[in-house]
Each structure stands twice: as C-alpha cells, then as structure tokens.
Length: 153
Image (cartoon, rainbow, N blue to C red; front, side, top):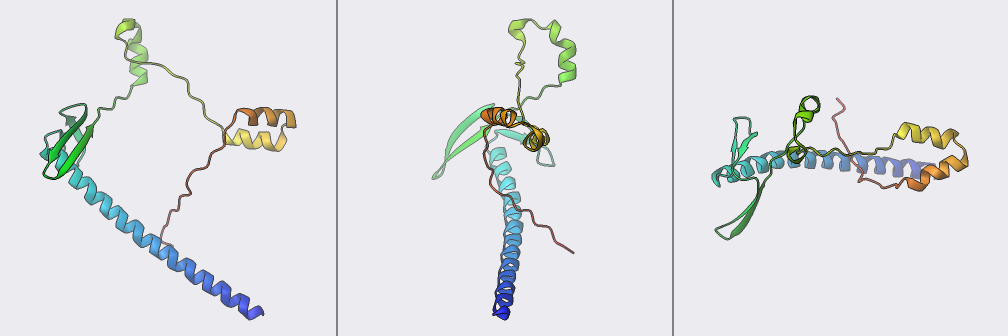
C-alpha cells in the first residue's frame, strides 16, 4: 500500500513537470506572436497613414485623435489612435494660478486604496466592532491567478 502512494506521487509530479514545461513553451510562443502582431499592427497603422513611428516603434504622432474605420478588401478595419495626456504635477502647481478657470483642463480627483498591511493588523488586533466596521465598506474581489515561470538553472 505504501509503494502505491509513492507511485501516485511520482506520476503526479511527472504530470506537473510536463504541464509546467508545456506552459513555458506556450508562454514563449505567445511572446513571439505578440511581437509579430505589434509589428504588423504598426505597419497597418503606418500604411493607413494614421500614425507615425520612430525607429524603435514608438508612436511619435497621430494623424487623427480618436477612431477611424475603413473597409480594406474584405475586412472592416477599426483603428483607435488616442492621444494620452499626463500631467507634470510640479509644473502644474506652479502655473495653475495663472490659468483662468474656464481654460484649466485639469480636474483633481481623490482616489482610495486599501493598505493591506493595516488591514492585516486590524484583523489581528482590532476589536470585533472595528473589524465589522471596516468590513462594512470593503468589497473583496478576486483576480485571475497569474503564473510566472523562470528557468531554475
């Protein structure tokens, strides 16, 4: 009976090694395909004259900010070329008082994030009343599990 358990563990371990090896191969293939896909997408966008790229493949400008749809052969091609703006907050703080309110494009917002270390402390040391209070406004959701493989050489 003891030998049967060892055999089962060996088979399970071999299956796990095979699955991890397969996943590693798939990850490599996906990475290669993503690079090819990005290269082809850049070429399509460039050929349609919707954006310009530098030698490293980074967008240097877009012809149209938004979305365009074209029929090419038997395909309907929808290309989104958004412009993304970031705020240099230090510079903005310096010049914001010089802007009139109607021409100030920046909207300030407040964001909330959960400090997991404080949450662990609450769960370990806080009273039941405090724990219940905190749990009343927290919503727990789960992300898709992520697996990262690295070669153990």
